[in-house]
Image 1 (spheres, helix red, strand yellow):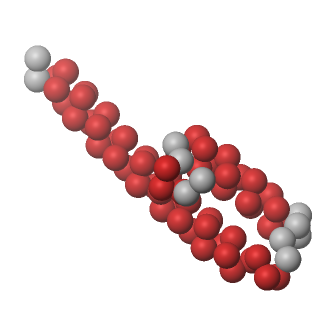
Image 2: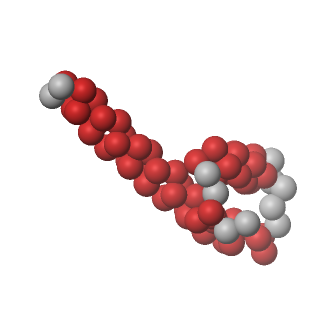
Length: 67
C-alpha cells in the first residue's frame, strides 16, 4: 500500500511499527535507508494531515462565532 493512500491512523500505525523495528534492531543494514525514507514520508503525510485538519477546525469554529 502506498503511503499517500493511507489514512492518518494507518500511517501512524505503520510509523509505530517501523520505529519499533528500528529500536529493536530488527532491520538489517540493507533496509535501514529505505525504512528511514519511508518514515520521513509518513511523518510528512501525518504532519500535513494534522495541519489541514487544524485549519478546517478553525474555519468551522470561526463560522460558529459569526452566526
